[in-house]
Image (tube, rainbow, N blue to C red; front, side):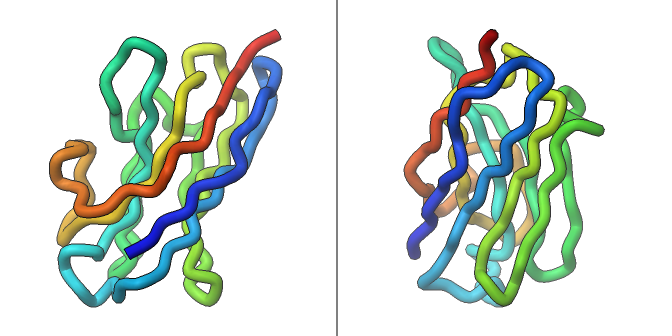
Amino acid sequence: VQLQASGGGLVQPGGSLRLSCAYSGFSPHNSANAVIAWFRQAPGKGREGVSCLSLTDGKIFVRDSVEGRFTISSDDAKNTVYLQMNSLKTEDTGVYYCATGGPWCSYWPDQMASWGQGTQVTVSS
């Protein structure tokens, strides 16, 4: 199982970024890998779930604090899940990780089976 997160960077408040998570080595029909979730970890804080997408039925979950600003989507042909982040705020700063788990979406890191490396997102003027 491999997940490769990319797309992070430095952006001003109000700006946008699109993160990508390219995955391989598993089938979403395997219940242990039925979902892809994005997590983030701010300096000095724990890892928190941001958004989750089910690869089997397309159900989407978005954390309240990013609702209306972040959008999760997938391109099944490319085995890639995206996180479009708009209207970024300084509090969105952190390392963003994608992870796979299942069979249902969860914001609990312990319920994710595999993780990609993180990509740094810094929102600063």
